[in-house]
Length: 183
Image 1 (cartoon, rainbow, N blue to C red):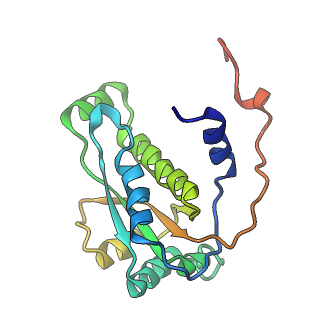
Image 2 (cartoon, one colour):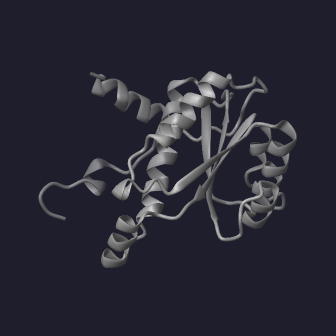
């Protein structure tokens, strides 16, 4: 059995790292990180994702360029990452689609969020920093990675050995975000 305190410590220590060393990520570690995403739960076991692992340095630079907004200095750090995982939304299975229609909720987006966090937590457990990125030129990434136009690129995750300092988490007080038995 896994110690619950250790899991909470891992969750608390996981942060968005935006500074990476140039040390490559070992293949066996990268495989475990991706496997954590693949093993994520999903509505009706739809697994509505495809993870594209980008570790070719030239392609990483092109993806990083698609993720940066140079005029406002956003996401320029992505170019330091030795690996980027691109998360593409795939079609859900029929059960999940029916449930989504009845409940007016797109479960595939929740599922991708769960898989993304699994990836980031496994990365942290492996000593790898990560940052989840939602700002990018989707059309450019689709073109670079030969992703069909019918597919959505939902997120990208930068991965690398972090050079960022550990920051203290600042969160709203629990009384503002947690209640029991009523709103």
